[in-house]
Amino acid sequence: MIRLKNEKQINGIRKSCKMLSAMYRELIPLVKPGIQTIDIDMWVRDWIKKAGGRPVFLGYKIKRIEYPAAICISINDEVIHGIPSKRKICEGDLVSLDCGIDLEGFISDQAVSIEAGKVSEEVHKLNVVTNECLYKGIAAVKAGDRLLQISRAVENHAKAHGYGIVREYCGHGVGFALHEDPQVPNYPHGPNPKMTNGMVFAIEPMINIGTGNINVLDDEWTVVTSDEKVSAHWEHTVAIVNGQAEVLTDPLEEVTGGII
Ligand code: MF3
Ligand code: CO
Image 1: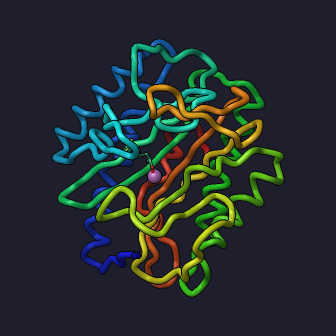
Image 2: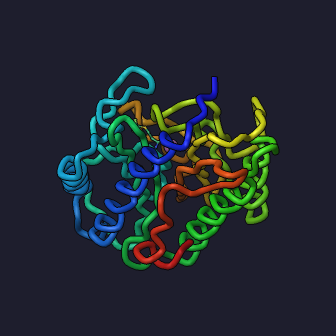
């Protein structure tokens, strides 16, 4: 069931989203070669607490095991749900950060892929195209049209560049809970509801240099590409207001290397 949000509720979700983007604006400049990912997680927990929010991912269950951190940090061939650890970020890594905040019961969700130092041309191109996939998806949001139009726009752009699309995970309704209906897949598949004012969802392409095939590691969280090639991930929380997409999270172009 899709739970539509009224104006007041969208205001609450917008506030949560702005808080999350404000956190990223401070965090992203710290994501440099040498930093341990566990230290990023500690920083995030502290920031969210001080800001008066709650990290939604911490303790969240998808299968059996609670997610043990406030942020997902997925490096290179890790697609999503990378668990912070003693691992240090290296020059040339593509570091995907994914985080959500609960502010007064309103949930936000945003992911970015950050280039640590100088990455290869091949990886930079993947990162730019994945970000473009997100914006192609956002451009397809229109009240009265069907949801899978978003999926088609994402898929077309990724395919035009010969990239693999991760099919096992997808975008989702968000706002009252982290994962609500509808599913927003990155290829046209499954239910295809009409988009209407008051819908709030996360669009989040996960795009690979190689095939779209993935495996889940023994920790039951970390999703990696089967061919060990690099994957990128970008995500915004979007509301439909006055028939059109309003991106509630911020683009962060000033800290993500001009990618928009
Ligand atoms: N932002 C992700 C998603 O949209 C990751 C949430 S998984 C969690 O599905 F367990 F870490 F919360
Ligand atoms: Co999400």
